[in-house]
Image (cartoon, rainbow, N blue to C red; front, top):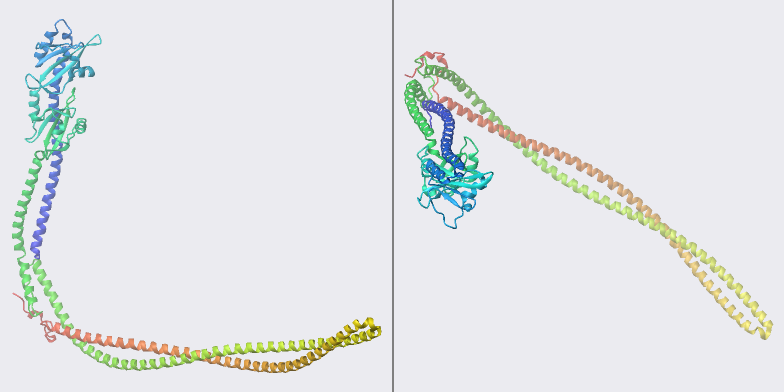
Length: 615
């Protein structure tokens, strides 16, 4: 879209013109809107306040008449004063109500017997306010017209003497309010206390609540606008946007509202806006026409240059051809610059053509050498992989041997510990046998003592027998005891001999066992020493095997690293070979690309004047 430079310039110019006109129209519109708003506000306020003053004069004149009649009605002829009041003020009837409930009227109306003037609204309101009041509108029963009552209290010596009242038809006032129309769709209304309608263009709304016109016409809104000068607020009546201005009627609780239609109030602004839009469209159309004709003429030379470039680009890349350089404008300058650029490109492509052939030959040699180096590197990598596999097998065998040596060393250490514990146990047995031998010697000594005791007992028993024999019959019982004692002594001696024999035999055997235990202890000590030497040797073998395993592991790591580096070198060689192949391919493509251009030969020199030009 808008690919043509001429169309872009035309579009940008139209946009700039449109923006300028829009900005100018916007500034004018905003300025006019500000003045229009102020003017509308002033006009509305003038209409509302002027008509409110007229209504105020109407009510003030009648209130003054009522107040001027206070003295005459208190004279000798109050009826004449009431008649004059009715005629001068245009009242239907004038009357005075007295505190006793009686009433006198200017038209001679006879009140019924139960009539009490003090209970009437006009009477009570005037007494309550102690000033002239205007009642709510009502329909007169006789004439059927809209009527309001004026009432003012009358006092004598500071005491209430009565209330003067008068009824006046307000049809003319309603007509005057209905005639207030700032615009065809605008209207005015007269209300009392912001609640009850006194006058309205629609007669059916009179004496109804003001909210019957619109729910937004609340007493609060009417009171707020009545206390603000030159102020209006937007309202919606029957779905249309309106502007409301309220002017209070001085001396009364009435207020005059003027409702202005929003569309009619801003009709002038819309007309100005429509004129600005039409002006914008007309100026934009004229500008587009004139500028388009001028651009078409101005870009004719550039289009010729474009056609010439397309002719060169769509051919076979003949860089010996040149653009025409007729004229002195920018198009001729572009053609001259392009011809100089083509000449430089021609020389550069000649150099590229010669260099591409050299690059192709060098790339071919690099690719061949890279392929040869890649084969040798792959062979070396294969050998290193085999070496690495063999080293891994050796490493596995050495690790297995080292593990077996560590297990044998652990077993020998366990055997050494067991033999050591056995030697200690044999030593304890030797000590125990020595203790048994000592105990046997002690028992032998005790048995010897017992044998001696038995021998002495036997001697004592023998002596006792001799003494009993000497005693005769008296010692017979003692002799019997002595004989028993000698028998026991003999038996004890015999048992002691047997025990001694057993102890001697046990001592001999104990001595033999002790000798055997000592021999076994010496043998265990030799076993412990041998196992200790075996453990030391296995420890040395284990250490040597571990060092050998670590050394082989380092060799294996070195071989793996060498294999990894060889693999990397092989990958680099392959990448280099691939790059050389790609370089060769690029050189071929470069040669083909350069061959696509028609170039002069080197032996033609700088005979550029002989190059053909496009006509």
